[in-house]
Image (cartoon, rainbow, N blue to C red):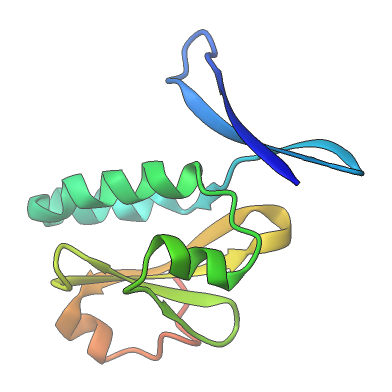
Length: 132
C-alpha cells in the first residue's frame, strides 16, 4: 500500500489535506470527520488556555485517517485506548481530558467528553455521552 498527501483548496474553505491510499481496490481518500466539534469550541471559550492545543488536535485528527487503535497510539503515545472504541487524550499537559469514540471504518471521531482532570475523574469514560 502506498500513501501520499494531496492538497485540495475549496473556494471558501481552508486548505485540507487528504491522505491518499492506493491499493488493489483503487484510490481512497481518507479524512477524519469530527462530530460535535462545537463542544470543543465552547470549551476553549471557557478555558482559553486550552484553545491552541485543542485547535492543533482538531487539525491533526482531521488529517489522520486512522484505521485502527494502534495508529492513534502511534500518533499520540500518551492517549489511552479504552473499550467501546473510546480514546482519552490529555490536553495541555494533562490539565484537561478529551474522550472520543472513533469509528475507524467511517473515518469519524465523536466527541463524548471534554473537561478538566477533576471533572474527568467523576465520569466513566467508557460510557459517557455528550449531552446536546
